Amino acid sequence: MTTYRIAPSILSADFARLGEEVRNVVAAGADFIHFDVMDNHYVPNLTIGPLVCEAIRPHVQVPIDVHLMVKPVDRIIPDFAKAGANIITFHPEASDHIDRSLQLIRDHGCKAGLVFNPGTPLHYLDHVMDKLDIVLIMSVNPGFGGQSFIPGALQKIAAVRQRIEASGREILLEVDGGIKVENIAEAAAAGADTFVAGSAIFGKPDYKAVIDAMRRSLAAV
Ligand code: DX5
Ligand code: ZN
Image 1: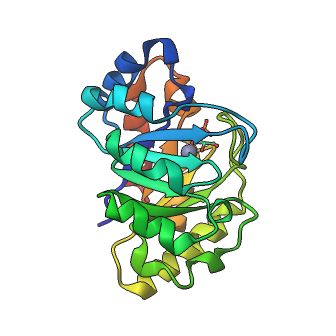
Image 2: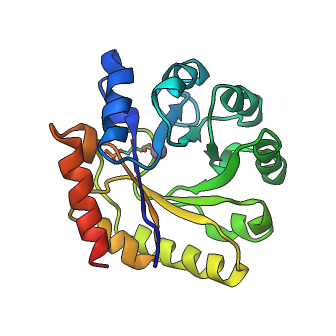
């Protein structure tokens, strides 16, 4: 049986009350905290860095899943590892040396992963499966919360699932962007096991009600 994980994205949280927000979402059943790092260069938005990761670290017992939307990548990896990140993913287009960046993440004691935008080909996976703990498929173009799920992501999830099975390795398959109670089962059926959701959770008054409803949808897959 597949273990499904729900990773609320704090991009849609109330940043004026971030400690309380992350405590509440973990109490509501979050498996990971998804932490979106944007640099106003690789993506057209600017968010949060290692300082904020360090600030929330004592408030949550679950892994912090840092999604780097920054270019360059390598310089900031040690800072996030020191700030308490458990998982660090980056976009292959943003690194000149993908293998080195993946190794750098592992050398700092974190799980490593690659992120694929809707238009990014999967061939970046060809020679690095042994260096991956997670693959993240974007179902929106990165930069903003609250966008609609791009259906083409389903095919891509299925293709990555095949590659993971063929590799025989334990690699998580995460999907990010426009995930809601209504479409989470479709993403799971395509092969995803880890689900980022920002506006679907933090946009609602009762986080537990949403996460429970997501788990009910997943149980029916
Ligand atoms: C988009 C971010 C996502 C975003 C998801 O660039 O990587 O993690 O917060 O937000 P929703 O779930 O609202 O699409
Ligand atoms: Zn993200």
